[in-house]
Length: 210
Length: 175
View 1 (cartoon, rainbow over the protein chains, first blue to last red):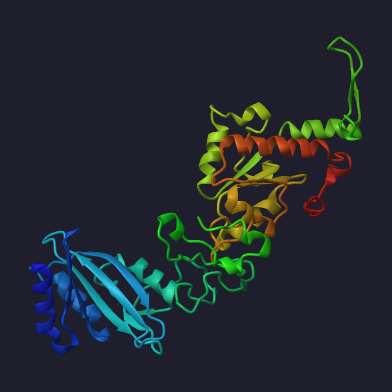
View 2: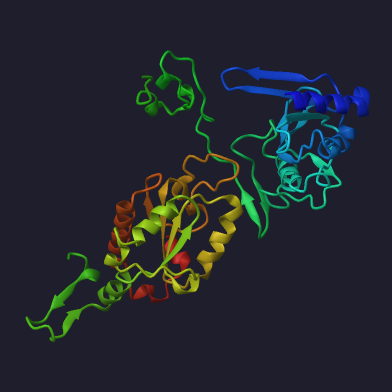
């Protein structure tokens, strides 16, 4: 935590009000004691560079980059960076807000080479473009696939698509799913299942609640 | 032995006497006892497939031990695992490269129906792109279940009009 606070101070000193007040997360049971700080989108690459180069901080390891889709809120997307330092043991989470109308973020590949695939995955699943990325291609889906599957407005069962000679997709039959949990006293009653009224008539009696 | 194509008659008590049978039955008999599998291992079912081929379960007891990693030398595709849409056309291409006559076993829930993956990324059953002869339930199936599927397939082959199928095409086997 001390390292993370020092990191936030260094960021505030350099970037001023482009760095917001950090939010702490502590949990005695798991021993977690972490700091998240929101940084303005245009300075994220420089902020990362500072955190890595500053000898007292030395965030030499980019653990992960995640995309977040808060559908129907503004800004819609967030990109989270989880940083760790093997030298000082510091842990820090950086957050960047990304508006829907301009889903672009400066790339941090020049700071940590390992960001390359993280950013490609984020681009593939959310359609967030990382400016300055050396090789921004899809990483899981194929080139030409027209959707971004982890966006909240994309259905779980998928949508039909076709890229000739490469791949096609069809919507999967969900039969009343995706599986939902219902409030129940016992754990077995809470297990995810298909909504009862979505089952065909003859199967409803068989799918009795425990 | 009611089926005409499976009739085999023994002419004498001595081994070196000729066997009298129908050509269909002879062709089927030869085919079903030397299936050369193409192990299409795509996920965890492939581990059970390897186990089936190894010493404890020993698929060679049923004449199907010659696993060929070239589709051009095999006549039985065992689709063992989750077929993603990204992999689907590659599976189809490998199937198309196998010479006729050929058969297919869909091993496990994923290969048969998509299994637990009701998802944008997974083909909902390999029978959407190629004709499947035997489906095996299980997640993954035990090796015994795969051996049972192999025996079921042998029974199916022995009922085929083998002579007519000398130049059987994949399209014909789909019906």
